[in-house]
Length: 267
DNA sequence: CTTACCGCCTGTCGGC
DNA sequence: TGCCGACAGGCGGTAA
Image (cartoon, rainbow, N blue to C red; front, top):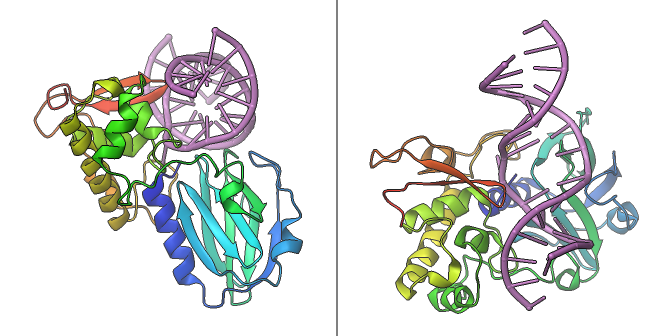
């Protein structure tokens, strides 16, 4: 479900809504997620203070002195914030009750999300192969040219590959390629230096703007307090019928995923 | 090593 | 009205 901008939005919302960062009780409601919730998480975090909440790729990391909780929202994962009394909803999986009145409830219809405890985040199996963060200086045209040169993947699959670029998913891949005027099925090693330059800039622009507007809500995504993201109204190709140039937008499957592009604007 | 495909889950929507 | 297949924003594991 959520990509980098949505996870960033949720992360910030959780952090800003906490008054007291001490966990009163971590409660498992239904442990069947992508991986069974294990590792005795309650005993590790009950009574502990969250030092920091941050995003890495599409993961939300709750950092403690002695380790981290690593959560992923999969396709349909949501956190909702409630206060005082918990009323159960279908597909609730766990909740984090803080020592203030906040309770953060994780709900996930399709169960593709996850939560793990790790004493060393960077070495955790879910984190150790994650690629560069696209909103850092290290993600530049030199990096992209170097990596694309060696790849025979379609460029859309390439920029969605978490081992290469962290956090870009199906929506923002389509949007960034539209901005760069590159067709999604172009082979990565066919990109020129200037195309790489353009694509790097486009990815950064799209992600920053989406964060600014609180993410994109196509189906399930909701911010912490149940609101939709406003970037939905700013989309240029994803889910749209017609390009601003007037041309009909194409929706083709690339590796089974819907991929939108304008045949006139993108070459 | 790289790339392609499967399967995990539930809910919704369109076609017949 | 009901049934059935297709599809939905992800990703690790495995096969080729």
